[in-house]
Image (cartoon, helix red, strand yellow):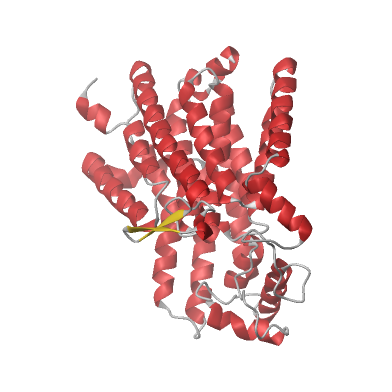
Length: 424
C-alpha cells in the first residue's frame, strides 16, 4: 500500500478524530487543530471547494444550523448582563461541530482491497482504545477515582464513573451518542470480535456512569434493534438474553440495583434522590424557572452566558431563595428557547430534519445509525442539556464525519453492510 495514500486515507483521518473521543475539551481541540492542519497540508486550497459537493439536504442542514448558531449568538450579544466574549467561543465551538465533518469529503477514497485493510486497522485501534477505557470505567466503579489536572484523586464519592471527563453525565451522554453506531456495527458484523469490544466499552460507560435516563434509553434502543432482526430464532434468543441480563442486574447487589432500591426507599447514601425544592422533582423546578425566563424574552432569548448568578433571581421569584441547585433547564428544547428564543428552536428543528434526510440513501448501516442517533439525541435531551457539553458535540461530530465518509463507500455496497447483513 502506498504510504502517502495510507496517511491521507479517510480511515487514518477518522482514526485521529476517534482518538479524541474519550478525552476532555483541551485534547479534543488539539486533535481538531492538528487534523485541520493536516487537511490543509494534504489538499491545500482545494479543501475549500468541498462544500460544493454537498447534497441539497446537506446544504439546507448546514444553512439552518448556521441560522441557529447566529440567532443564539445574537441573543447573547444583545443581553447586556452577560459577557460578550462568550459569543465568539460559542460560534466557534458550535460552528466546528457542523462544519468540520464536511472536510472529510475531501479525503481521497481508497480502492476496495485497501479499504478492507484500513477498516480492519481502524477497527482494531478503536477496539483497543475501547478496552482501555472499559478498564478505566470498571476501576472507577470499584475503587473510586477521578483525574484532577494531572493528578489522580481517590475517594468513594468518585465511584460513579466519569472517565476523563469532568462529570459522569458527560460520559453517559457521550456513550449514548456512540451507542447506535457500536450496536449496529455489532449487529451487521457479529462474527467479528472488534465490534463486540467497542460495544462492551460503550455499555460499560453507560452502566458505570449511572444515568437513569441513559440506561432507560439504552434498553429502548436494544429492543428496537432486536425487534428488527430478520431471523425469528435469533430475535427470540436476543430477547431472552436481554431479559436474563436485566433480571441478573436487578437481582444482585450492584450499582444499578443499589440506586433503584434507594430510589424506592426515598433515601440512602450517595445514590439518594433528594429533592431540594417544593416541586415533586427538582427538574420540574428547572423547567418552570426557565419557562418564566422564556415568557420574559420569548423572541430573542437571554443568550448562552446565563450562570448561576444570572439565574438565581428567577429562582428567588418562584420561592426558591435558598435552592441548592439553581441549574440550567435540564431540557434541551427549553434551554434552546431560553437562550436563543423561539426562532432558535425553529432553526434547530429544521437542522435536525434536514440532517435526518441528508443520509437517506447510503445503505442500511448509515440509515439505522442516523435514525437511532437522532432519536436518542432528542429523547435524551428531554431531561438533560446534553448538546451543551462540548464532549457530547464532539461525539456527534464523529458520527457526522462517518456519514460524510460513507458517501464514498456508497460506491461499494459491500462496505455498507449489505454483504455482512447477508452473512448475519
